Structures are given as structure tokens and as C-alpha cells.
Image 1 (tube, rainbow, N blue to C red):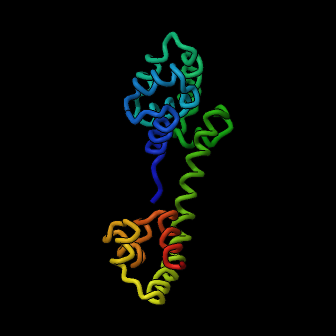
Image 2: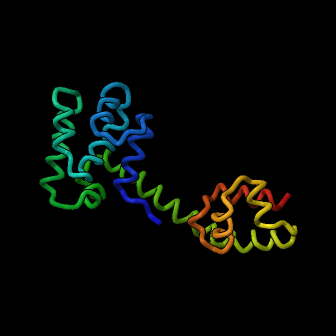
Length: 173
């Protein structure tokens, strides 16, 4: 399942500012204080949420005011969706990089799921070969039994690639 751009931006801002809040005000305060790398994702997040005027108000009198106003003005004049605008050469490179990060993370999840689909039959074969029950494996690895059972039946959304590799290493030793 591909995560949305707004969800990616929310998590990206939280990661860069090291706060778990979704409050645009708190995120901007943290950016102004000591997290300038989150400035571009925060403006993009506010545009996704339709709250750019609020962030522009927060930026008034700060070093971000002119940059934010210029970006919003360019975006408004362009008339494209935000994702289309960020894909074009009209968008500033700093903002294009945020969108590229989103695309990379979305593609990684898709690739991981494809790998897991190929790994599940091998894990099931190893389970049979080793004579280990799914219950015992779930208990030993500390995994939720229902999620593990579902994963081994082919629902690859139930486990991350890292968790699947932990299962593989458990079964292959």
C-alpha cells in the first residue's frame, strides 16, 4: 500500500524536528529554533492540508517569510496540483528533493512487498523442513501470532522486510 504524500510529509517533519506533534505551530517553532531542514516539508505539508496561510502567518518576521511567500506565489500561479508542480522544473530544487524522497520511500515499500511475496513460500518450506510450528516460532520471535499466520498465508502487508528476514534467519539456523 502506497502511503500518501501528506502522511509522508507529516512523518518527515516529525523525524526532522524530533517531535511527535502534528501541530503546524509547534513544528514551525521547532524549525525556527533549530531544525531548518524541516522548513520545506512543513510548507508542503501546510499546502496539502490547505493551511498555507496559517504557516505564512507563523513565518511573518522570520528568515522563512520571503522564501515561503515566493514558493506559495509560484505554486498558485502554476495552477497544477502540488505533486505535479513539484515534478516540474518550475519548483525550486529544495522542494523537488522533498518530493523525490517521498517517491523513493513509496517505491521501496512496493519493492519490499514484491520480495516478500517471493520469500513466503521459502519460509513455509523451511517451517515444514525444520518441523517447527508457527505458534512456537511466533512465541520464540515475539511476534503476534495472528500477523505471523496471515503473513505465512501470503498477506505480505503483515510483516516488514526486516521481520521476514528475522524469520528466515531463525529458520535457517
